[in-house]
Length: 275
Image 1 (cartoon, one colour):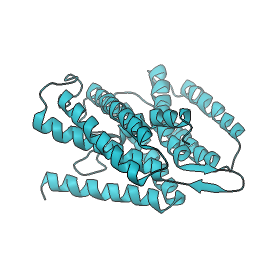
Image 2 (tube, one colour):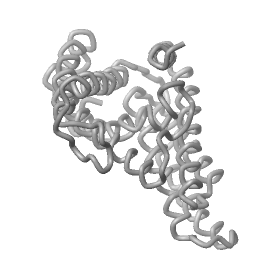
Image 3 (cartoon, rainbow, N blue to C red):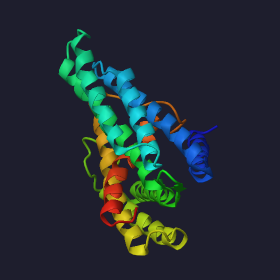
Image 4 (cartoon, rainbow, N blue to C red):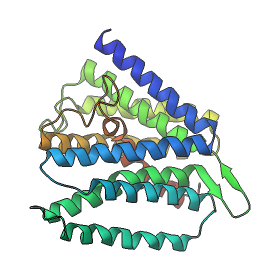
């Protein structure tokens, strides 16, 4: 089987699983993305090991999982906001544990551990707030906005890749990502806005003007996400974050754009009082 065919099949299956789990219901969505959050954080901390750091992987992943679970329960209306304060001692525990680890780079270890929580677990947790609106009496799960965001991220990635490969001549930041071009960036914008226009016809919870605005946010933040992860990998000297998907690399390689897109789109949705 050729590398291109392997990449296409694995990518298509991955998209089907993601969309299916989100569309079926909040339980399948919760289980899948709790697992994705966990696995992606483990990948990230493994990159730290390759950089000769010693992050507190287990504690970091535990806090990340706990925050994802908390965001699901809180957005569902099952727990109070005050429970968020329980994460303060957990974050303090990272510093306490490092005191007894006898490592050569304690500051870097602490920083990398905390970065994994905010860089990966926090964005994924925002998916709960985007798709779930609950109270102590009922829970409303609507996956349409979240699915729309995913479609926009994939549209941007596809448009940027196709235009970049066929027409890309002017490199963006070659020292970090030699293949990214300004032509690809423009192609990503055009494709994303086109898909945003189509999405607005089916997901009318958000008006066309807001979908177009979300599309623009997506294009800029997705590129930033790709470049940031490329910077991490290049500094360590690795090509992929892992080997989860044949032809695609690891989970962090697949979600590097989304984890940058989600926080900014969430802020936009909140400010515009859409969610």
